[in-house]
Length: 347
Image (tube, rainbow, N blue to C red; front, side):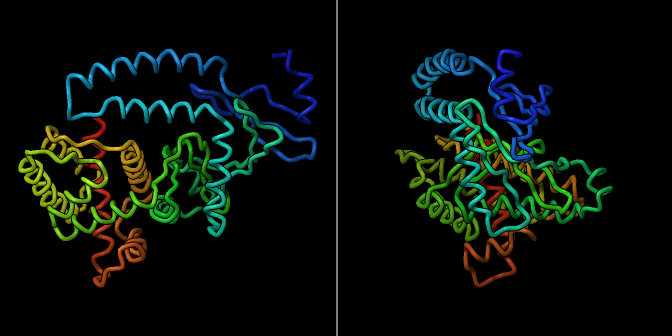
């Protein structure tokens, strides 16, 4: 609006009125600071919080009613996590802090770049960031024309996410191709830090217990770890749960040996455990949705993409197993297992 033109000219040397990107929550404009530095300015659409308040109140009422009809599901818990994520996503101060934390986590990784936040030009509804142009990660034609090795990009995209989940415990929860680009030097550029996930240390330890149990085909060990994670609520009828987990372990091993897609594993096992009283934190869903997205990106960039090859050193670091040759296989088992659990939770 022309009303804000004097303020824009005071803050910026130039400001493009035409957005370079637009979505349901806001839009992004290019601008130049008076120092000459190029930036992007993310502007939130007006009235979002009021709309969220109305819609989420209706969802809360629905969740309360659904909980009364199904004691095995925690719809109010799901609602609470979703509401928290949505409100965080429209708080640009929170997004800026996420970007700063993400950048610190990758400060020793030269092939990952995160835009610097210009806090003096930011507020809860406006976020000003360093301008980092790049090629969309799935744009094979432009990447190849720029002389960028797409096989290396595929590998780095997976490595970056493994580092986020397994080392940092803080990860980008929405790494779709629109939020990841590649610069002229082949470095990964991550955008949009409104939706992030966090894995606290005790949850990380229990997840490792789940992975170990999968590797050993230890049904009791997997159940114990899932109980401690709060995924399974102990009940008088644990036999059906034990049977479902046992069948799950047999299938995940067979399907991973065949290198079936993570999504296919989740689909096939969904029917087995649909009636079990599993309650999955939203974090699980975010992690496995991202794994599934990255698997698709990897295979787009490199038809010979193999998750286990990339994951082997991270498995060695985390699991410290003697049988090094099996470690990538273990991580792929873990990814397939978590995807299947996330598929159940999403219902």
